[in-house]
Image 1 (cartoon, one colour):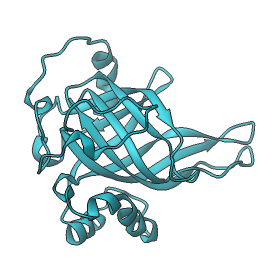
Image 2: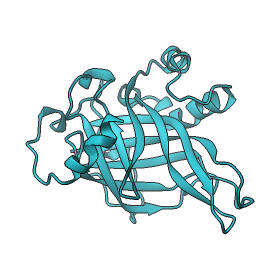
Image 3: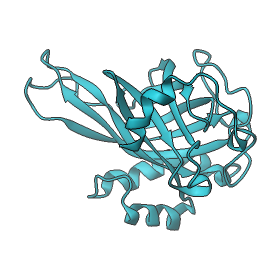
Image 4: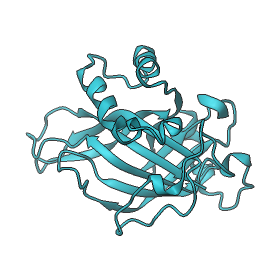
Length: 225
């Protein structure tokens, strides 16, 4: 709610002083830009990511009058995976987290019990949240690190973005797109990349008037300065 109230002011601000969280890695361990191998249709990460995370969440959809599901945004908990880089698990973490998430009866990605299981299984901890806000009818993706992790309490540790590129997942049509987001406002990062997505796509059609649905997914998110 606070983010929604602040959004018009933030979007109207074009120049903000860059605080220290945009300078160098803010995760537990440094990760090189080469850790994110992107197709040529997405602009490459130009520098080492300042955050390397796995997102565990759900994509939300509503049924349109034409019988198709349309996105109403997403919500996810973000976990720092930077210290997994150099280990085999770094490549598989999105699949392994999805296996746990999909089999769990909870539908809340912020469930403390889930966070405990991820900590126990892979020694990863929450660093932020991902969600959307509505700005005059436009869904705006938000990455919010103001209440979790080492930036907790820093009101500038937030990213409001816009999509500037996307491609279908090369790993299958059941997975949501890979994409690049560019900062509109906030001081958390300049760009956010979503890659290695697992599931999240809705059924191909729906009966008009049927209820909204949520589809579980995971993905890697890399944030660059």
